Length: 99
Image (cartoon, rainbow, N blue to C red; front, side, top):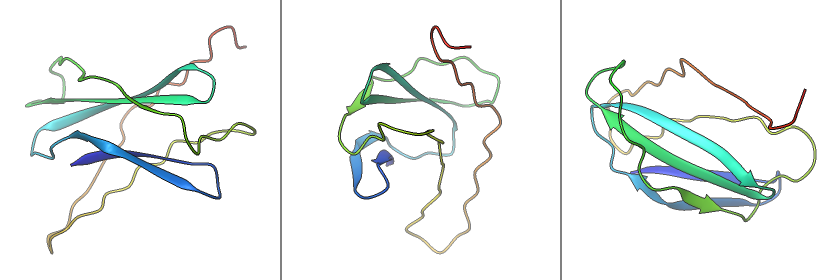
């Protein structure tokens, strides 16, 4: 399963499963609408350019950094012996009211 994780540098919180892993393309949305809370959601599609609907948000409000810059990190962990890869092709960062 795809999972989301937050860490404040000392403690870590791993969310409930976001979606089952498949061979489909995956789009990940990480956002925040409230300070101290991060929302994660996933959509899976059969081709890279195909539009898809994001699943429900998974809300995490524990072990979220509250000072300094937050930098998204992506990892691939696999439970079998075959090699897995990930490409992050686009990252959009918006701060409402920011400059």
